[in-house]
Image (cartoon, rainbow, N blue to C red; front, side, top):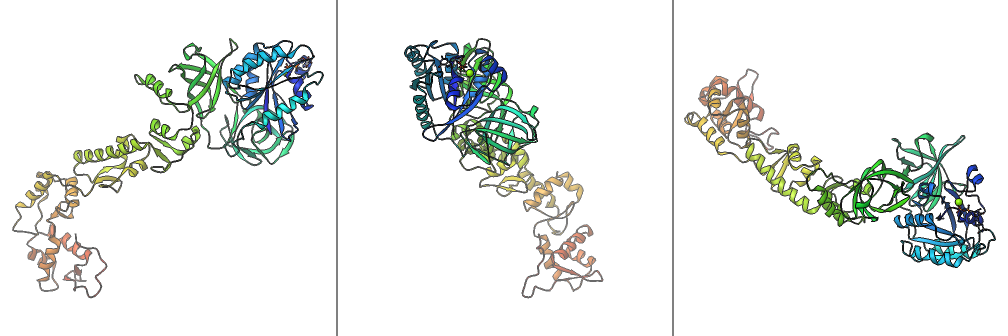
Length: 596
Ligand SMILES: Nc1nc2c(ncn2[C@@H]2O[C@H](COP(=O)(O)OP(=O)(O)O)[C@@H](O)[C@H]2O)c(=O)[nH]1
Ligand SMILES: [Mg+2]
């Protein structure tokens, strides 16, 4: 199926032509038929000689109903521009053409009708010249009469040529169905209609509906008046939604493939048309079937930031139109350059942003997006309309390569700085590093760790712990008075005098400067192994006192030392509390902890 919108001044014969081509009544409302004037969008369809089906979105021509006209042409890729031979080019001929041009519609057909009332040649020549200067370019043209039927055969052939030249729809793409009508049917509930420009909808699908927090379910589908299990783009489609209140949905809402769009209230755009400086502070943005007032903040000569009064599911590269409703003036088309633009609070930010926007064109540009955003989640980019290839650096995160390399360097610096500021800690905590580097996710910090950096126990360090000189000196001094008593531990007060608190002791243990038997009970490294050799020289088994005397130490040391030797299997404690040195391992070594 192909969808073509009508365009043209009021009373020039658009609806008459649609009626003549399809045999269907595009003016749906009693009021429209009474007044003989289209007010809202009409829908009708016909099969052409080629077998192609063309569905018409018939739009109102009256200047009061231009917003309805824009809702109809917004999602439609082609237009049939109708001009009356007896009236020629008129104000809404011009405004409708300006709208098609602003939306960058590339495919069209000129029909000069009411040819029974006047020579169509002058109107045809004038309209052709106007159209040639727009995005539509050179279009096919026919002269007809909706009243007599003259030329309708040529018109059908011209329509066949028009739809034959339309680009193939992206039927694998995500669905964004801009709703142009919603109503209720007794027993079925809420029904919405729209022109499906890309993707496909199936009965049973779960979709997002803008303005509705929970996903909605497709209960039934119709296209061209017949029920369907599936409808693929391009198509006119009616969707029966389960569990949606009719008041929750209106023209301008959209049905969306879940997770593929983000609603945005702030966009940066390029304006094609009037100079940005001449735009009024508030204009209406028309895109799809939506129309929302926006506040304009000019940035560059042809770029601006728009604050939308209602969030819309927009993507980079979308086309929209700005209209000044007071002046009935299409101010220009816009190309969406960014749907998640950066803040402009800092001094000079607006000028820098203008420079940046000058280089952007609304094409999906992964390297450019990474360069500007530095770090971004894949799904977020996809929601913005940038299909994200590329390898994530961690989880779903994509990074600009230069930024990532710089972050790696900064991580090394931050780890070194943390080590200098906290010499006793075994590395910098991941969370602290995440904060210092301004990263949104701790997984990114871990992904940045490269040799010689290592991550262990939630901390990043540069290789084995380095021992600060003061710590070595303090430990040396603690043991200096005890050189002739190798199993004596410095007293607690002496450790305190030397500044060896719990943190310093922990660092000294990790650095292998001391062996800790209990709080404030420290021996030089290797002391437990040497104690085993001394105790092996005693008559076996031996008591705690005999061990204490042999080691020339105090109970404060002997008790935890022997307990350590028991635990590691170097000694065996007998039921009478005496101990023996364990027999040397026969064959297999004992499966026990080793001595520190
Ligand atoms: N004589 C003549 N009248 C026409 C022709 N086409 C439309 N009309 C009349 O022009 C008026 C406006 O037509 P309509 O299709 O409603 O115009 P629209 O506003 O563009 O949809 C109606 O009274 C039609 O009967 C035509 O080809 N010849
Ligand atoms: Mg009409």
